[in-house]
Image (cartoon, rainbow, N blue to C red):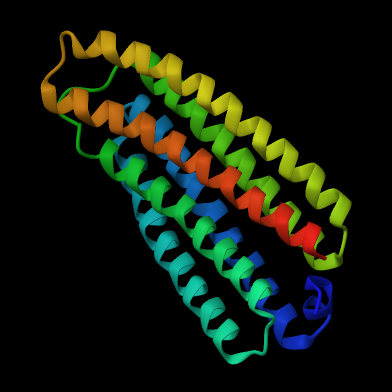
Length: 220
C-alpha cells in the first residue's frame, strides 16, 4: 500500500488533518516564544510574562494533539512504513515546541541583569527564522494532504536553507556569548549559551521535520 493510498482513506486522512492542527499550534508557540525575546530585549516584563503564558499553554495543546494523532494511528490499519513515518513526523515536530518553550523559560531566569542587546538581537533573528521554517512546514503539510508532492519537496528544500542560515547565526552568537562570558556571572553565561543553542536546536528539528515530509512525499 502506497502512502497516497492511505491518505485517500478516511481515517488515515484524519490523522494528517490532525497533524496540520498540531503544527498550527506549534507555530503559535514559536511565534510567542520569539515575541518573548523581543519583550525581554525591550524590558517589557509584562509582555514577557504574557508570552510565556501563551507558550506554556500552547505547548500543552500541541502535546494533546500529538496524543490524539498517535491514538488515531493505533486504531487505524496502516502499512508499517506509513505508520512509522507519520509517528516520526509528529514526534519530531513536537520537539520544535519543546525547544521554543525551553528558550522562553530560560529568558525568565535572568531578570536581575539584562542580557546584552547584541546577543538578544541575534537570538531574535534566529527565532524569526525558526518561525519562518515552521510556517513552511505548515504549508508543506497542507500540500501533502492535497497530494502536491512537488511542492512538498520544494518547501522542504527551503526549510533546509533556513536551518543553514540559523546555523551561521548560531556560530556568530556563540562568539558574542564567549566575549560576554569573560565578564558575566557564570550562571548568566550558562543561560545565554543555552538560549542560543536551544533556538538552534529548534531549527534543527525543523529541518528534521522537513526531511520526514520529503520522505513521505517520495514514498507516495
